[in-house]
Image 1 (cartoon, rainbow, N blue to C red):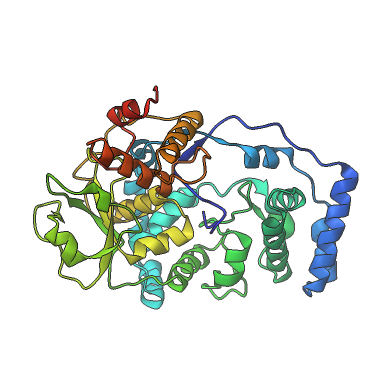
Image 2 (image 1 turned 180 degrees about the vertical axis):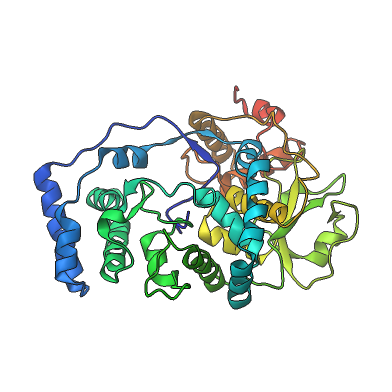
Length: 399
């Protein structure tokens, strides 16, 4: 889902929601009037704005979904196995052949290889099988009237009105996710405005009904973020027996030659490519799971969705669709599933010990992983930043 800074992690499973915060009918009407005035200042057609805003509804369900708090962290093994399935790989390969001419043309024009475009398509909407059934305008208006992220969603609502204004789709047919993501590749309205293209030349940018528009728009978005068609996203690698795991993490980039000197090899034991490129090492399920060297295109994928898990899933699915096999090292299935209180307890313990885990928020992010690596190193544990049972025991955290 192209949410930009809205989506901070894809490695979190959501649980029961907090109570809805309904807005009065009068308050919602006043909010809609504010949107009408804002649209007028942006030069949007007054009749289209009036018709689009006339029947908007406050949706309690949208607020409930927005208020959901992360309760359990999802282990990488669960995240990947649910998204990169044999069926999705088979469907992706079939669609790669079925739409080969279109994908080849898009790849030539935008420089993004076809398997990646099919992988994004598969992860976002299961190849167009489900776009979401909620009114985008209702959802965005509800979120824009809510105080929590009003500024962001007001901008998205104005972008959605601009999409209607340009004739891309009628307001009553603009359906998508609860947060306003739309079409085959789940663009937020602001991403649509900046990056959607009319690739089938029918006079409108249609991400719902035109696969050429959708795939070319996805390629245009990735290209605009700096996709480099000279390189892949990254690769699974084999680590040396005594690899220094403190060197892992997205921010710790090194030339491939230095990773080679540290004993990293391709999974078949051969040397790494002699390319002049930097990479970072990720071990999303600790030293017992797969390891990945990721390149600049990995950061581009994270510009689409800021979750490392999501970006790894895109890369691996693209490889599988292109004909590669499964991972050489399967993520361990016995990884602990921590609840939010347990993660907060870990963060509090790490901060108290002088390891900067960041805000105590119950979200398992890069700062927490780095702090845990430092803690593990001090306790003569494998410093892979992964909360295995030995580490949790050392922290005094009960499973």
